[in-house]
Amino acid sequence: MAEERGLPPGARGDETIGLIPLGGLKREELDFLPPAIREIVGLEAIWGPPLHLPRGAYRAGRRQYLASSLLQALAALPRETHLRLLGITDVDLYAPGLNFVFGQALMGGRECVISVARLHPSFYGAPPEEVLFRDRVVKEAVHELGHTFGLEHCPDPNCVMRFSNSLADTDLKGRDFCASCRRTLRRALGTGG
Image 1 (cartoon, rainbow, N blue to C red):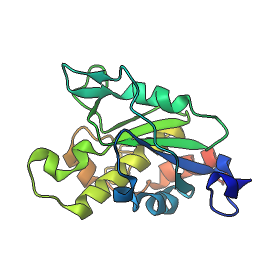
Image 2: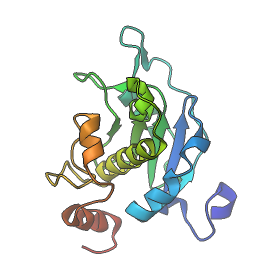
Image 3: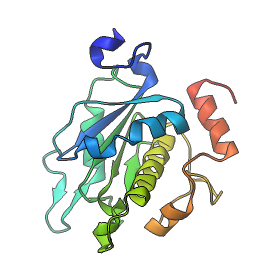
Image 4: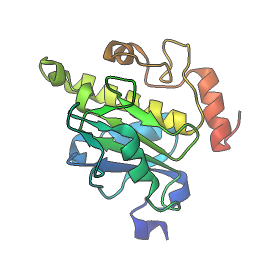
């Protein structure tokens, strides 16, 4: 029964996005995220139980965590709990060949992960800006979720699926999908084309 698993009344686990705190992330600081995902993606997003950061994910020489290790930890969770899983952490992530990543996803898969570490203006020595931080978190979360639904990077500069090579790119793009990406998402969700 949905209510027994902490789901909103009427929601089924296979129709929700599970938000999974990884490491010491304080989910209370991200309470703005579930309603934003519901508004943009069209699915309920609910908090799941936190996970420890996987052993072996930390690379001392880089002082970063390997993003794919976090995806593997998410993949080990029961399949029937949620349609998609979004892991969220406050540690700095990287992928092989890259200095850092804001997030990573399994294209067309169930799992994706984002880090809020580099989304804080204070990471760069700037004063905190809560509105800017929240906007960045929503964009990165929706972007990575888009990949799980098969959406590739988009050339539209306003589309949330536009590739972010830097934080400036994230700040410039929009929070929502362009018309073409929205159609692809609807097809993936089985809600039309």
